Every structure is written in structure tokens, then in C-alpha cells.
Length: 229
Length: 256
Picture (tube, each protein chain N blue to C red):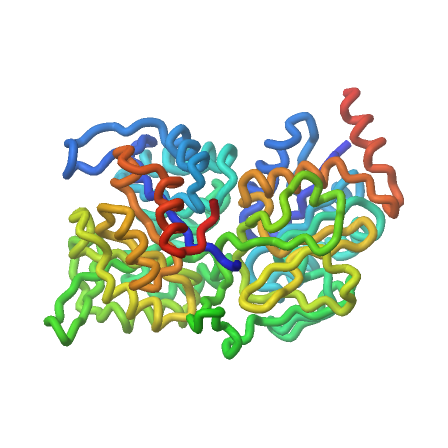
């Protein structure tokens, strides 16, 4: 039994995600996989992503992972990271492509004309480095993480959520944007918890402990079983 | 409050060990890269840069092991550079746990490498290291790109090169002043400011840090997005936390 599947569709550094999860939960079985059956069999699913969203969508489909991702996002504790957040939405300005449309909203590029800070200085794109995250609503994944903690970001596109009710956290660059969304059993973040030191590790630990009311399958039971091996 | 300016300690690695610069206390082994990386992480470093200064391929494999071990224990971004020549080299370093790969000489020899690696793995993980030496006169400054660890002139104008690298898909520039590197006289502020103001992508200032005030100058006067330093941290003169506290007192937004 796989406790956590980290979905691998050939885009970027997944070792970091897996290592960070292993670090906070050494007793759990973490598998980096591109096999839809392994994803289907996992109690919890992490959906990461780096690079360009059109490439990510194409590579995901090339490996036949679309159905497994949609099913996991519907039924089990599901954590999207970076492009893995962006792909959950309806469309992206990056390559003008459609996303998985599991959540309402669009992915936009940071507009060059708006990238000026309060002191009149130019802001760079990608948005790269440690920014403050304002938790807009209470959520089990924020448990024990102080308000305005800094997380590590690296991205040129951001999510414009179609429903404010799903926004769980915002950052400012230079305008506020959704950097965390929550809906049912889905939690997804623009920043990289696996690279965000203690705050990031805490968020990952919180994800592993999370028992979303809407999850169709009791993830806790699966983890309890694995602990008995 | 928004994005923090970053402090990046740089570690020179050879044969799987960190070595300290030879100019100040003579050549010596500075210890286990994992221990040193963990120490900087605890002090609040925002990223770590590892520079592979070895020549042989056996030693390069040791570097991959170092990256693997550090990535399993230190959960902040890792940039690895030195001797990266192909997309395959980039892939191996990313798979070992590097978050970004820094490319210098090979970018000059084969500029397409930057486009190919960026298209394959994303601009966010491709750092182009530009080693620039001042060749112009006061009042009419010009800088030339050097390769092979600053030993070989290329005749390429550094500013033009920076723009080209951004266009090809670099996600960040690691800008080192060859004139200042190792001098502890401070960054080449003019070079740093021109680069940073000219480009859309972030610029890391490097070369010449000898005091905490130099870090402040790099940000406030050089407009750098991040500052990289080696010796002031290696010799225990200052901790990263002291540097950040100093910068915060000067009104710079940092992650404390």
C-alpha cells in the first residue's frame, strides 16, 4: 500500500518533494510514480510541477495520468504544488491552453506594466524568493504556521480564482494574488513547501495528518493499515 | 511587506569536500558539505550555492552525491554550478536534488544550451553565471565576459550577453565582478545596477563582499535581488543571521 504518491510526469525535480515528505514522515511509504494504477492506489496524492504549463499538460497526458489525477483530486487528500496548482484551473495564458478545470479561474502572467513596488522600483519576473503568505481562512494545513510566514516562490504566472471562496492564502507582488486554494479534499499552493524550511515542512506534515470531510476514501485508515506492517 | 531580498552563502566543493579560499588562510579543507550546509540553513540562509571546482569526472560524481545528501536534509533551494556542459548534466544535477543549475563557460561555447535546458526544465532552474571584467574607462564603463573561472577573455560585451541570455530563457543571472572577486572591497556597484535595471529577471550580485555594509550596498545601490558571499561567512566573521539583522536595520526586507 502506498501512503503517498508523488505524481511524476517528467517535469522537474521531484526528489525534493519526496525527500521533504520522507523527512516529516519517515514511517510512511512515499512513491514517486508515473503509473496511473499506483496513483489510484495511494491514500494521498501530491501533484507537483515545474516548467511550462503546456509541457506539463502534454507530458501528463502522454503518460495517461489525466484520469488518475482527476480521480485523486475528487476523492482523496490532494496537494497541488506550483504548476500542479495552476493545472487545476480552467485555462492559462501560458500557451493559451486549457487546464483540468477542477477549480474555477484562470492562470495569468504577471503583467509587465504593473510590476512596480510601493517605492517605484521595478519588480522582477519570475517572482523568485521568499514572500509572506497571508492566510485568508483557517484550514488544517495552516495549523501551527504563523500568519505572514514566508514561503519560497518561483513562478511567472499566478492564479486568478473565479471564486473567492476557494482562496486560502494570498501573497503580494505587487498586488495580492491567490497563493493557496482549498476546496473539499484539494489544497494547492503556488509556493514550494518542500523548499520553504520549517514553515514548508509543517505544511507538508499537516497535509499528511489532514482528514478532509469530503474525501471519499478514509485516508487515515489506509495509513493506520500501513503502520501495522 | 513583500518579497525578501535573499542572502546566498556560496560553498566551493572539490572531491566531495568544501574548501576554503586560498588567499586568506592558505589552502585547507573546510569540512563536510552537509554539516556546513546545515549550519547555514540553521542561520537562516535563503538559498545555498555549491560551486564544483574539481576537474576529474570521478570527482564530479562525488558532487552528485553531495547534492543528494544535502537535498535530503536541507529544505531550502540549492543552486549547483561548475562544469555543466550539456542538457544531460542539467538533468543529472536536478535529479540529484539541485533546484537550479548555474552555467557559465558552456553558455558562451554553446548559447543554445541555455535555450534547450530552459525549454526542457523551465527558466526557473536555469541560472547563467556571468563573470565580467571591467575594460572601459571611468565615465565610459564597459565590461567583458570571461570564462573558465575567469581565466579566458571572450571579447563579448557583458551587458549585451546578459540581455541575450534573458532572451534565450535564463531565469536568473549570477553576476560576478572579476575585478572585485576575492578583494573584499565590495561589489562593483555600477555593473550590478546597470545589469539589474536592464533585465526583467532577478540578478544575484557576487564578488568582493568583505563587510555587511557591502551586502547593503549591493541591494540599495546595486539594485540586486540577492547577494552571494563566501568568505565573510566561511571564516565565521559573521553569521547569515547577523547579516540579515544588519540589512533589516538598514530598511531592507529580509526573511528573519
